[in-house]
Length: 359
Ligand SMILES: NC(=O)c1ccc[n+]([C@@H]2O[C@H](COP(=O)([O-])OP(=O)(O)OC[C@H]3O[C@@H](n4cnc5c(N)ncnc54)[C@H](O)[C@@H]3O)[C@@H](O)[C@H]2O)c1
Image (cartoon, rainbow, N blue to C red):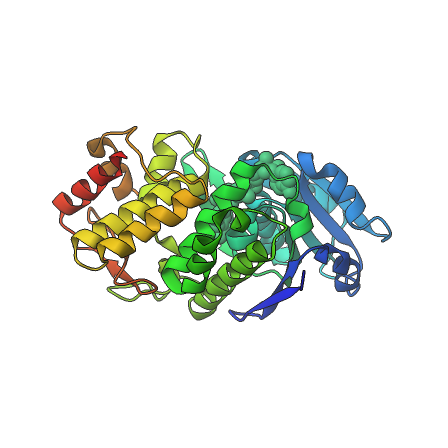
């Protein structure tokens, strides 16, 4: 499998390197730094121990798994751990794990000594396609997810596809929702590659998977390079907000299901709903809306949702971080690969599109 490389040119350019075995490049990559602090979740202990086995000056910090790592208490413990080993600005922080690990570790790097160099080795499809690229870092509070954070870019991201071999298929498929989203908003070649052979698109060792992942990373790189701090979003202008396609309903479903749905599963339903809204507004043809459903269902993602009455979900959507007042600021497609912002959609249309999710 050939190695792929995507350059993100936001505030400080960095490369995302994608391919089987690319973590072998770490030893050379980190040679400029004196010492390395590696943060990883408990299930990846063996991988973390082997990662830089031949290198001296490596400090391993085991985090709680998944969202349990994204807390102020874990941050404080990490800062104290770094103080105890005396990590300096000549050293580097490395994250190894899924999006929860890359989010918290990125924030640790952003805040330790007011910012030290940081390298990310994402180990889930979601983290490779989304969380580890683009520079958003942060932790949760009991009051809400990702309420505390910083924009902070890594020096490099290594997406080693060999690390995905043991990832449960539910996690792989969940990550594919973000990849398909990128195809819908900006790159029809992604959706073509999925339509042609959905089963192969789900195989993390296939060239097809490497292609769609790399293309999704390119889409994200292009969007964040143009609007790193989400500053463009105003009025009808769309920058980084395009990446929010499908997420307004998804965030409400995640909350309503107490996060028992994986993020990508909720995004999948959110994409089908957004397409149904756009179809009702005449922005998408029935065939384009149907493409959403067909693509997502083909890789095993949910495309229907009936668990919650609309009147219960709708108020949660108004509390979305991207909402402005009561009216929803929705990312819709005005034709495939043409995201637009709409904040004036009739409530009847929103509810009617939701009824179309009944399966
Ligand atoms: N910063 C961003 O732009 C951004 C974007 C999207 C999502 N996120 C964040 O990402 C997080 C979700 O990320 P996620 O879906 O990767 O979840 P996660 O980090 O919780 O990982 C999911 C599970 O997979 C396990 N795992 C990780 N790598 C593995 C591997 N290679 N093999 C086997 N198991 C492995 C983890 O230990 C964990 O139990 C959320 O906190 C979300 O807020 C951030």
